Length: 76
Image (cartoon, rainbow, N blue to C red; front, top):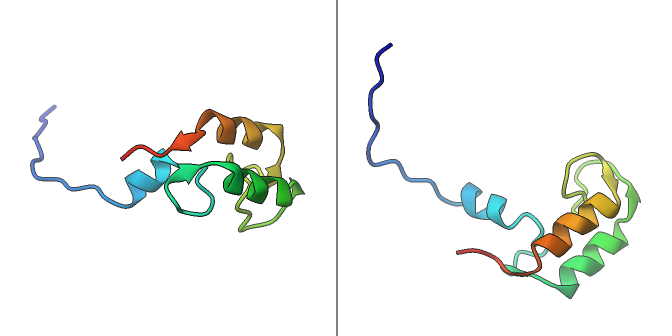
């Protein structure tokens, strides 16, 4: 098998967003404002559903765990 190297790849935007999925209002901090959004969308939901952090069409304890685990400033 032949492998070739790839140089000069730039990744932006999407990577930053993925690193801070619990920042529901986009202010680069996971805090009470994001918790309020999550709690305000609690229960079954369609798409889009900002509080559904794990993509199962339900805002529940699993999403709360993701949010609490990411609490604080988002990574750069």
